[in-house]
Amino acid sequence: MRDTGRGRGAVRAGADTVHLPHKNAVGPLRQVVRRLVLALLVMALTVLIVYIDRAGYHDNAGGSMSLLDCVYYATVTLSTTGYGDVVPYSASARLTNVLLVTPLRVLFLIILVGTTLEVLTERTREQYRQQRWRSIVRDHTVIVGYGTKGRSAARTLTGHGVPAQRIVVVDPDHKAVESAVSAGFAGVTGDATRNDVLLRAEIQRAKELIIAAQRDDTAVLVALTARQLNKRINIVASVREEENAPLLRQSGANAVVTSSGAAGRLLGMSMLSPSAGEVMEELISYGSGLDLIERPVTKAEAGLDPREVGDLVVVVKRGHRLLDHDNPEASPLQLTDRLIVIHRTSQDDPSHVPQG
Image 1 (cartoon, rainbow, N blue to C red):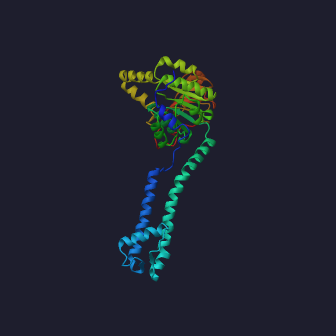
Image 2 (image 1 turned 30 degrees about the horizontal axis):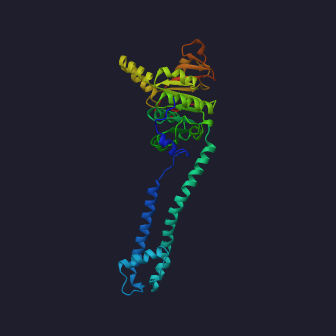
């Protein structure tokens, strides 16, 4: 049942690291090019200074200082080579060397040494960031698979107020992981059916696991592996075929969503009632106007009837029981209840992130 056909090469390529998002990240090639341009600007400025005061320099080879001689002098001076064949002999040239050329030499060396140090310390800095991340990450959400389903799940979580720093994406495709990292999530490249890959995602300290794998057998293996590593984790998984849902529940999933069945039901509803289909699509698309959310009962709502709440109450969750809004047992609301409601939200609405 193990899915071994997808991304195996990429698994080993990133098998020893967690990819963390960088704030205002600049690629190494761009950094080198930028520093090289700065070095060339410093060189050009030095050549200009020497060329303007070229009459104050003496060339042991004889003759007046040409532009090439000025470039040569600037090069050997900034690189601290200093052959001594071209020297400043006038007072103005020596003063210029003290006040301008010497600081430019120091700046030139700083640029070169800084580039070298940047390359040498990048790996150390990344290791430190990973160690620090591992020391603070806990009660986070792991998303296995960053395809269409995984990306939609991540957007829904962040839309509901989950910080991007608390989401870790695991995918065998390094391009998918790069996309997740660019979106602000931590990423692990590897096969999530392997213990070591899930351990790199700190699954043992995670609170939730979303399985959005491409294949049902992969989802089953991921659920089994994750449940073995973390007994308390809440696992929500997606399967393509309805017949595989019971197997996934037996493997440790707390909730199973059948993607093909859900899509089929939405298609049928849209055919029979296009308006109802649009409303349902809006309910499951967070931030589009009407959102189906779960939230706790507020102090002001405790003791009220579900119909007296500002949001449209669909279900009252009391303990492990789900009570319909018109169930006599649902009234009055208790402070320990949770409500599943239809809530109208907008980006300008300060309450668009549900409480709890």
